[in-house]
Image (tube, rainbow, N blue to C red; front, top):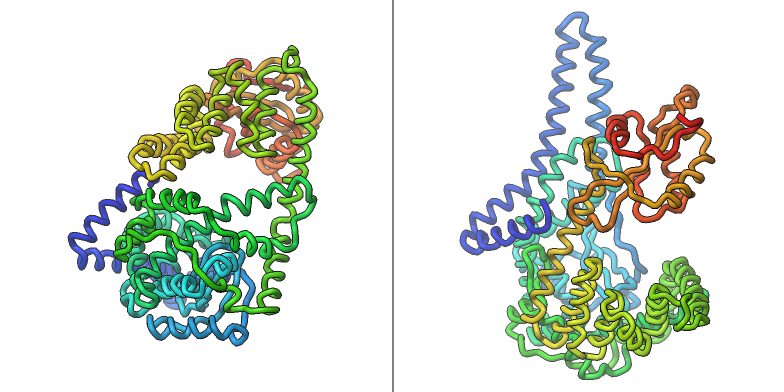
Length: 632
């Protein structure tokens, strides 16, 4: 089931739930229980067969040997089935805190628990994300008895007031609330448990999961679509629970504040921090102290209004579990709310004053530093390389033959990456004069103009997208953001549709590239002889490589981005000493992929055993054999 089919099914089910709510509830219960019945059926079937075999061994003379052999298969299979269900779901990660050290936070949690009739919170964790949530981790996998974790992001505590954080927590507690409705809470828990278990089963790769995979492949999309409808209703119900605890206006103001404050960090704090990757080899150790300072700065009214308008333009789609902001604010009868900065201390200082808060901040900053050090150092090396390459390009005279358009585009890209969009202005002015139709020049100028608030940038972006399909996703994204920030939702709609259409094409293209049919789906590679010669020279050093075939996959969706297939045959005599051609072929394919620089997208695979039928089809392509040891 692709995204379009899923969204259509979800939309149909939403109408069904509105027209026949009781029947719909019954269908959801039946579908939820079907998962349990399937598991029970598999286990009972295995137990029944074992019992029958044992009875046969007792009653049928001479059958004991066969029965013992079969039991030797079935008993381990039954155990493996049980063990695969007893999945240990990982608890959320974070800095665990003792609520005795945060009496104000403990008081809020206790009040919400009693007001909303929720289960006890077992563990409170502080994390590095701008988020909060209540996570239930079943102690016995499919069989429940959850342990409840309250997860609160430190950035959210820095950004919101105590009242705002209370509203956020009330929403999260509302999902588990008895006041929310026992049926709703039960469906929410079952849904979270099923998807967590399915993810864990696949990730663990345990024996026995093959028994369930085919069922999950059908069950997961169906159960997901049926419960997506309820999930949206649960979000509205949780908002009403939050309004009950803190007031509808406070709940709506908090929803909008989280949008504005997170956008403030994304637009200012994080980009400025990234700039320091150029001068600092390792990340700073006080990131949350810096974030505290950034959040303390007043947000310009123009920026707050821009981010608010953007958020209000989003609409709830058929595949969205979380309703859009406008729908949530409408339910709270607070659609007219505007962003209003709070007065007084942030929740972090109120809950963890003085040294307690400083200690937490240092610990979280240290963890953040540990998590990002490798990526930071890689980014530092890349940006230093950009500086050096930029200096090299700028030594060339723009009027010389050594300064082609590709070098100018590369210079444009590096300047934008190192110094920001605005710094590309002088370069783009010259490039538009020299190469007005170049797609990357048009895209760059369009991005610059949209960044300046000039609608003329839309025309440049459209020109880039019409000449280069690779610009469609990002180009439509820029235009949609431009219109959304100005509340111009209707103007953005055609570009949303175009972006969605392009995403569907890319998904189908990816599926096509991941399949290699045993058919005539292959063409001559079409690579220049010097490129093929370089590949062949590199292949000669692999002693056990016998032959190599190079072809191009026939593609339906994105043929402008070719996929080359390099098929390998290995010398047969070598495998008389080892496990088999397929296993050694996989190892050699990985080595070649890691050791030989290949132009474009290549799929390297052996042509033995399960891939043997492909050999005849690649051989049938003209000039496909690019390497044969000893001239064979």
